[in-house]
View 1 (cartoon, rainbow, N blue to C red):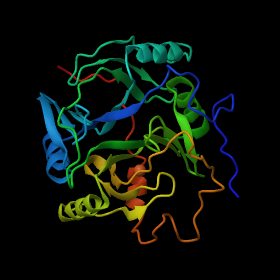
View 2 (cartoon, rainbow, N blue to C red):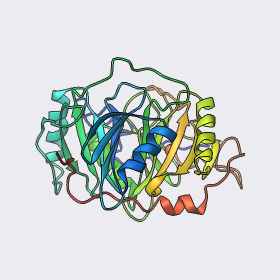
View 3 (cartoon, helix red, strand yellow):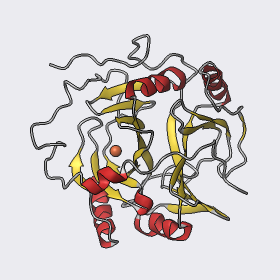
View 4 (spheres, helix red, strand yellow):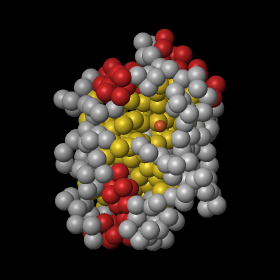
Length: 322
Ligand SMILES: [Fe+2]
């Protein structure tokens, strides 16, 4: 029988975090450093099916069909890096409250909240989390009026999974200071929730704070399947999938994209409310030989597992040039 979830929060709070106003409420996107900007933009538009919204010298910003101004910033860099993760908060008051909470955490790098002079604008600040990831919290950022779903095109970024050598400690930090809720835990992963979606962040047990994978939400299973076929036509084999996960109940197909970025198409992510019953590793188990609900998936391949260790956060708090 499943035991109740053990929260990594110091006080044992398995609820919505430590304070009402210190809460993020969404995942907007990520910025990636890429070694060949032109070909990476071609991949993420022609094959992955995001759409460019702004182009600056050395940077291209891509959107999904959802409301966020952009969900992926690509920046020409000498090496592939994860540069920043953007989380959204409801407004200025919440930004300031989160900032005040983080001030108590004695972080090595914490910017002051200010107007953002980058595509999409808004108000917010960046910081380095205790393991060196660059996170930005923002509010008042531009949204698209034509948001919706379109067959076979990503809506936006569904979740980011990050490796950590101390999953409990880093999850506790995100619960305490950003207001996440630990929604489920497996032997390998802790899933963090901040809205009606089962998770937007997860930490996976690893050896270093590297990128495990980025997942983009498709409108339905058919779009995941068509996307997988298009990737295959483009020379990118399925590295894990097609399957349906346990926690989150989402359909998945994983690929190793350009620069060895592990990227996922996903659909049907479970929507949760306050009554959702969180479960621990005792509940989330598979029969021998299984790693998902359907049992038909290819992988995960060794190639994907290796790629999941390769992309690290660049030093310093990222700001695009120009
Ligand atoms: Fe995923």
